[in-house]
Image (cartoon, rainbow, N blue to C red; front, side, top):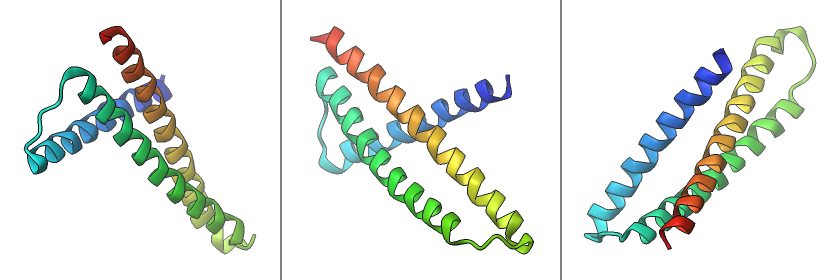
Amino acid sequence: MWERFIKACDRVFEMSSLEHYIRKRQQATEETYSEIDGLQARINALREFIKSDRNELELLEANLEKLNDSSNNESFRNMLKGKIRNFNRKIGTKTAMIEMFQSLSAISR
């Protein structure tokens, strides 16, 4: 139940962040998107966000690998593992959103 709640929260926050990004981008360029162009802009933005998330994830994983096994590092190791889980979950959420926008795009054509 808790995991479903967290995933739902992730989806709400990711969608809100995406819409904020799209609005800012449109305001900066004074451009308006057609329905299809808007869906494609969202897909492209999500792909860029995923790329950034994967870079951060790789850095976290590299830091975790470099951390020695002493018991003094256990809390830091747990924090890194938690961040890695969060990034993996958020990447999954963004990937699902891309699939949703692609389906909407296919329907709209």
